[in-house]
Length: 375
Ligand code: ADP
Ligand code: MG
Image (cartoon, rainbow, N blue to C red):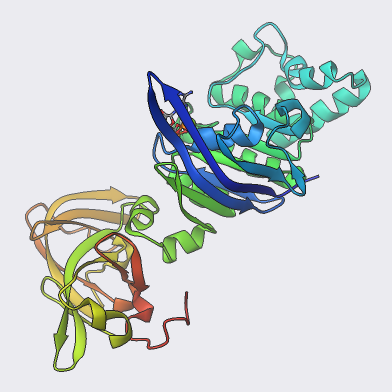
């Protein structure tokens, strides 16, 4: 039965050669029961360490982990009803696919008939029914990883943990396996925690995303919220491709009202949020998808460097003064290197970051005088 996972002030440090290295730094979050939650962030940010602590393969230096009401911090991995799938595919080479998938059940003493029912169910969900009597070496990498997923599935875990299970697969197989993994989630009554460094995987597959930054929690929210309501410059830059454009601006008072003074444009801003920030450098974030060559309340000029075609869309990489700017639009096919184009945007699509990279407010709150309304 799926259980929520409570991570409470968990800290993990490694000591080597006298030096202390903090891998996970005071992490607290509750992963909802039955959810598909993704831990995402750049390499080294603490994803695997967090997952291994949930599995019981590592012990937190400080803090507690609970599955529902049960504190599992000191419980061995076998006693957590938790299954884990790794990036490197771990199959027994001398066993058939059927034997590989059923091995865990066999060790537990599950009778052959029941085992076979469960194996066949897993094979159906993962679309490897035709491969059951083959040896692992006869399968493609994607099929092998499905077998590993099948071994986890048949154990009917309360908690299923996956650590970058698709990293070694090519793009096509990844796209296929993404669907398989989601099907697995629908069929299992389990809380799933999926680790990836790939924000596209995180955004497309999961219902909750945990974005880590140097061992610390940066934001924990549904994918849409990370995209539309990033709490920091870091989140806005990590989520979405190409990355959010960053435009420098300064808070200026003009005839008793406030404006965010950018390079060639001015954005009106409310006194509530900006009166105590006069003269402060800030950064405006705007997603490449919200810059457009035709239509918007504000505009600035971009010198084009490179144009890429992505299906029906064009990605224009250019510069505005010394700032790199990316624009995604379906109507920029005629543009070439060296061209000067005017791009427009609406202020409601902006993110406003302070000098430390924290979000001050979102564009739709800029002139809204009740700060509590949206956040
Ligand atoms: P991720 O999975 O996000 O790439 P990890 O959780 O593997 O990151 O690692 C987080 C940090 O902890 C990294 O800086 C890594 O070098 C360090 N680390 C992980 N495992 C160990 C270990 N066994 N000994 C020492 N340092 C480790
Ligand atoms: Mg890792």
